[in-house]
Image (cartoon, rainbow over all chains, first blue to last red; front, side, top):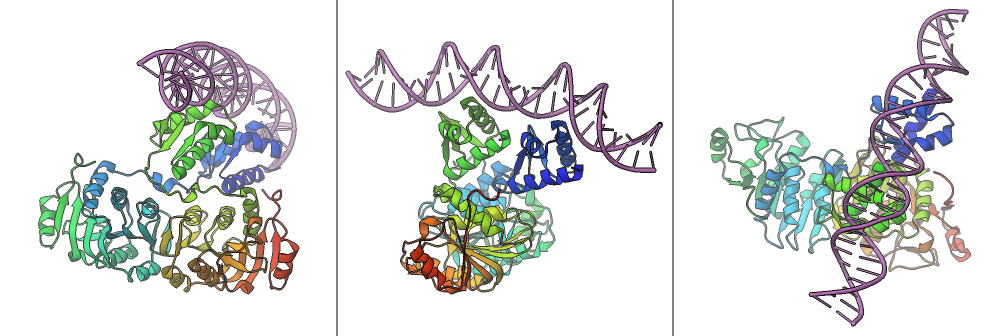
Length: 257
Length: 257
DNA sequence: GCCCGGATGCCACAAATTACAACATAATTG
DNA sequence: CAATTATGTTGTAATTTGTGGCATCCGGGC
């Protein structure tokens, strides 16, 4: 059996089943352990799989990684989530966008009861559904593997049928000129639509978002009631924001529980 | 079984069900108590779960009980999933309904590439997205906490825009008269609509579904091309099914890998 | 509160498995 | 045939897992 055949066998097994042990390959292919180990090393070198003690694992183990993804400035986002959630009473209707900061809001909202939730984020959906009498509506659309959020025409079409008490959206960036910005046009359009789909619109953005830019300017920023962050913005941005009818709320990491 | 696989098993069980006991892992994985304890210590070190007396708890104080439900006849459903997935080539478009048997199909479809998937099931969505170049579209609607499936007018409205190569739906029951039945009207209507939204319609139903009844009769059963099950139906039902233009496929638990 | 049996935690050591490197042998190529 | 590459073998170090002993914790009965 040729080396390439062996490696193809290993790779396909790993990819269909998620893992393989060296002992198993040895049984099936009748070659020495060392040869297999070398094959695995070669495949791992080419980033086709991940080598482990006694075997190999698939790289595309996309199942629970979504929720595991490292969150930068987790403490700040948790604080933002707590403060944001404190605006929402039991029984309210809430639209939740995607993004890790908004997920922090979803986390904090787990303490509320009888919410009606609309979200395009699979993770927030999982957190709030079946809990405390909440009703969760998932916005349809194509799911982005990166963040587990739906996007596209289906999403906006469904959203257009609803109007909630609150909407929480994140920001790709908040530019020095005080513009709300996102990285893709689709996301920006969804956020823009969301902002006019609730009585009280809230943008959550941790300190890292300020003073940066992103390719797409999001409309309807003037519809926003609160901007929740975890540090007072720089004077330049603060001035720009002062021109808007929004109130900036700064969350304290120490406060709350 | 590799160490990382064990740890992944422990973690996913803990996260879907909230807790796990060492005794239970020991029964299922057949490794020593110490090994499990070491796995749990390692996972706890990495802040992935919380160690307790005799087991471990999830950190995320939520997580749906969605997947909690014990799957009855798991082997049969796995076989049905394998056989069903064998109908689907790489690159096809597939509609997946909710239900544990259809989830078995989703599991088996993880080996395919470049699928376009439409599903109203959060679990199937998670399994297939971000994998092998698949594109997954989530059907919007109100999420049922029991099974993580969306349902309602939004779901049907979005589905109406699409037509796929294959559709896989489950069955609440298949009556002695050979009727396809479901437990709620909404689910029945969605299934009925799905059946006419694909070129090849497949109903998957394990042996426990036959000869029972459920409150709602599902229309368009005559649109079904294949009925995949894991045991030959009783003669009475077989006769009733023979009147329909469908082919019954019986999956063998032994076959396949 | 106290005692007790069983389960569990934790430690140290043994056994088994695996990794890695060095070298020998076989296969392939020019 | 020589050179090169691939594979097998062997020996040792490192890692992982199992085992047994003993301390500790838990729940129940008194």
